[in-house]
Amino acid sequence: MNAINGISRKRVSTQALSIALIICSGLWVVSACIYYSTSGFRGDWSATPLLWMLAVIATPAVCFAGGMILFDARKHSRFTVIEWWALAAIFLPVTVGTLLSVLAVKVLFGMSGI
Image (cartoon, rainbow, N blue to C red; front, side):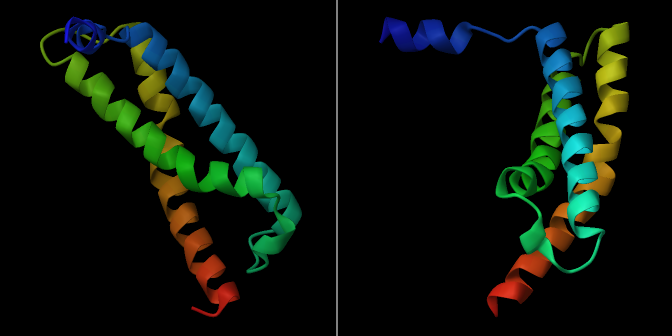
């Protein structure tokens, strides 16, 4: 029981979370560019490699969840510069990325006949 209590008390630093959010945002930008270069925003998702399709679909949710954790960690104190950079970096994946992932799922269901 002590091991479980010890694990739950460990917290991720906000600087590490900010760096992870910036990296995740960069991964989304790269995957969106690869999607555009292979499919050109047409309905043909089969041309995009699976790894990059998963990145297009999953990273907006990860960025949104990380942003909520960052906001929750800083309720009573001010954001540092790197935290502001992380919040600015996740803006594009959360807004445009959510729309792109909804489009991706819609097209994938259309291709499968559902």
